[in-house]
Amino acid sequence: MLSFLVSPSFWASVLASTTPVLLATLAANIMTKAGIFNLGIEGTMLICALGGVLASGFTGSLFIGMLVGVLLGILVSFVLGYFILVMNAPMNSCGVAINLAATGGTVFILAMVCGSKNNSSSLVSAYFPNVAIPLLKDIPVVGQILSGQNAVTYLSWIFVAATYFLLYHTKLGLNIRAVGENEAAAKSAGINVLRIKFIALAMCGLFCAFGGMYLSMGALHGFTAGMVSGRGFLSLAMDAIAQGNPLIGCASSFLYGFSNTITVYLQLYSQLDLQLISAFPYVFILVVLMFIQLGRSRIEKKKQRAQF
Image 1 (cartoon, rainbow, N blue to C red):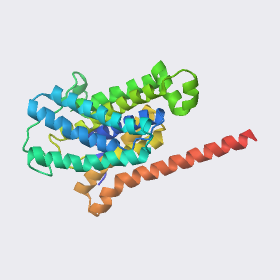
Image 2: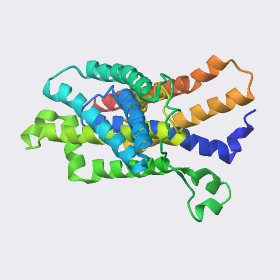
Image 3: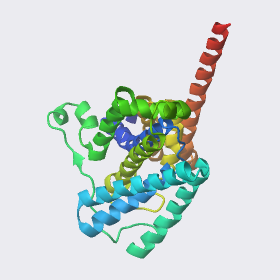
Image 4: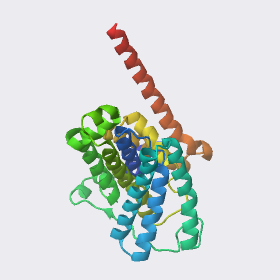
């Protein structure tokens, strides 16, 4: 039954399933490093997914659709930042408000523009192409897995490397980490805390935008109501594993992609109950997170004993 685990198509699907969660996890990583808990990643992704489809559908341009999606992601993140950082509103409440507004607002706009509360099938939108990489595509097995992925998938890998380099090898990254770790100390060092946090929010909006647009303009060629399906919330669990590190966030997102793809294959090839299979990715991530937290607790206890 598990023979599909050695299939190149299975591992290619794992990379595709990983992409939206990886981008959402990067958004959560940058927020963690900046000292902000962004519960609105789910809603931001949903808004960008619809915005990209509508803009590209009406203009016929993938670039304009992508640009509108990115600008919407940054705008929503800035709205969150305004209420949290300027108005001193509770982070969790603002995140929930964005998610609720996105859930209802996208359905309302979808019904107004496309005449359906479920999908945008009446509107033909542009979409990100799959990319066959020269030379790599001719390599057996490896080429089948790594080549032919969506353009956003490759872009997400670039984002991981760029974010890691930014956070740990640039002055801006140092400032972001300083602000997140000790805001008062950062202020005393002359860092403009508000500006740094809004820069981090802009990066968060960028990653959310591509995560949402991948779902509506990559994996699918259209918007479906609620299509983010909890991936924004899962990114918070991935970030809890990564603790703000983009490389570990990438690895933890791969675990979700693996478990989610297994779910699809189990639905096709096993006789297990469908509800039980659907819960597998979430249970799997919770178990992994539990073991990681237990390991961290033991390490902390050993350090405390060593001090005495």
